[in-house]
Image 1: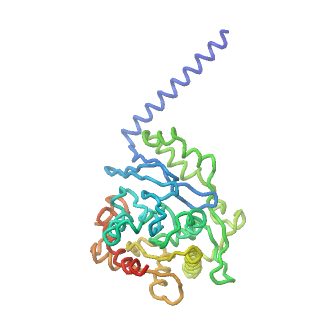
Image 2: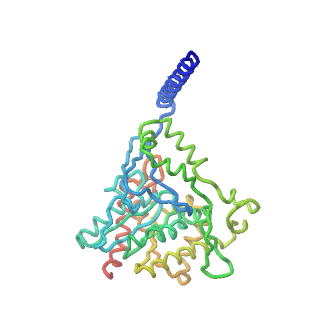
Image 3: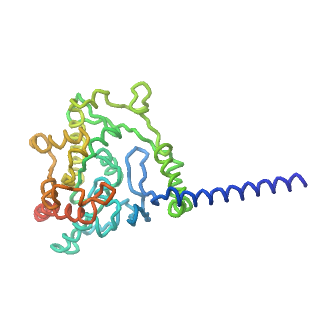
Length: 361
């Protein structure tokens, strides 16, 4: 009996000490190293492509700025799917998602407002964009979720790191022996128990209220959540197919061939599913920000228009004309993403391109 009493006292003391330590640590972090809190909403499919959460909401702080995000069951941001309308599915990275912007300020929503003026209640823009995605994420996403959305138009907003991400994520390898041929592969594999953890209410509550929890989640995302199946592209240790290391050389044309083949794959998906595929860059193509692979693709797609079958439109000149040569003025302060004015400019420039496309639907 006495032993049980001592054990209970010891356990109680440990619990009290642990709680006090956490409280003191939380107070110190808030004072010394305050965090911008956020609830994570990005998930990874077992096949390695990224996607938004299904349903629910999340939020994201950055200094004095706070954005709220809402998702449909189809993993779209904001607007619920209406199958009776002409659906324009937009895909892309965090620019198109509208990171740090509320729904009414993102350029996909602003395009919706323009469409409502000329054709009320008949056209619907749907936002499937995912922060951190690259070109190679989208064939998998479309195979998994695209048929349910059934878009009439598929609008890919290409940004300045999409080709680099296509290489680094290793979701596809270009088969050099056959034009446009791709070998499906993967780099990152999500650890399922940690993915499930991200959906727990108590875990999300900690993210929304605790500064320590936000530090812990950041560490987990960088080091634990995902397994590198390539072992950093080590040919001897990789458990999945990887390209030869000389494919990453600056003088190699591998990245252009890979990019073209993935875009053709998406175009083929559209052909099979009755939609028109349009590629429009965001207009934020600052050469000093781009990887060498993205620079090479951008030069190729602008000047070699006969050797690709997708519709490509360039927003750069329009965005720079409306914004001035210094794009920093249309970026969120302390960040690289478009602010409200930048988002409006992208919407205005894109609408100049889309208006004629929609008129011919």
